[in-house]
Length: 458
Image (cartoon, rainbow, N blue to C red):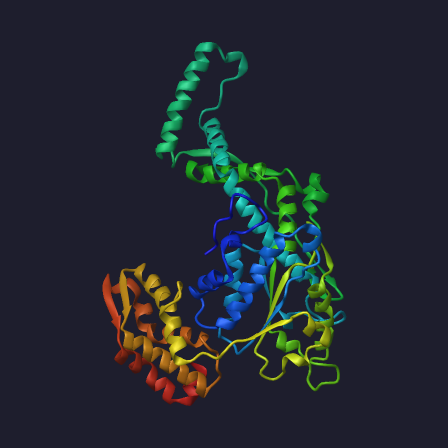
């Protein structure tokens, strides 16, 4: 859950008042275990706040201490980074290193990492600014809606008595409008055309979006076109409110703040970095692995990337990389890239007790998610403690016998256990349903005993 921004500053996030120990406590609400990784990211995030309190000339010299997380899949690497970004209110983007390739090979350009980060920052700032103009936009939309329901009299006809009568009728309509009595009445609204052309260009790096806004370049061709639609008042209100919000938003300010936030507090999570770990001459089909590392290196070191919102510096962006490193090892990365990730933490494989906790403890625990889903159809789902432990045991057993995918196995196990209940849904009416250990064993034992079935189903 994102913490509200403090009123005293646009630059310091709500994290300003949290110590690293408190940051870890917040992460504990969502991620089970992995204390070393949580400690590392908490310190890195707190150091960012400390840097913002320094004089500009000193702060400019302090770069983020990027983190390399090493651990098998499904142990919480991505979740830690994602929750960290939500907690801090920072722009966050997750990319997969294997999607990028060096110049000359088909794939995405590494600069798109920064462009995606800025887009995330723009969305974040826009949402915050919309909250500030929400009431004013709603008030202006109401006035426009009243103009549609009761057009004002023409100036030549507007005598004092007619103006008084108009104001009285308008006030009466306003009361009915706020009371919801006019929601189904039809009004004719002019709405802007949204069918602006979009296209992509093919570059040497692959297919990339073109950072050019044709609407701004050719306003006569693409801008200002509207069409009239007849809508109920309930829908027209939303259309007019969005239009007023767009008018009240200062787009230049949004872009400026977004660029500043991306530069000073952006977080980039590079997953699957082990897939590009390798040197030239190593065996394997991917000859461009070292080239990808060398292309990513300037972004991590600190460079300027051109975006449609302006140039963006990456010197103070926090990079968190993660990989399982089953086949390769961190030392297989080129030395320059290794040096840019000075903090390394190893995440531990999950045990049966960890899986039990994952099913029940986090704020968005899997068991709670399924209870919430089925409650929408009147099914009061509950699990006994023994059932939770049995599901964790079976998940652990399948992980050991086949591929270890960590906590992700729990989703498959739960889907299998709840298959019949989910299929029936509310067709049998509201009812309580309790899942016990016997039910779990009935559903899972036949699959787990059959290695062929467990390989494909679980």
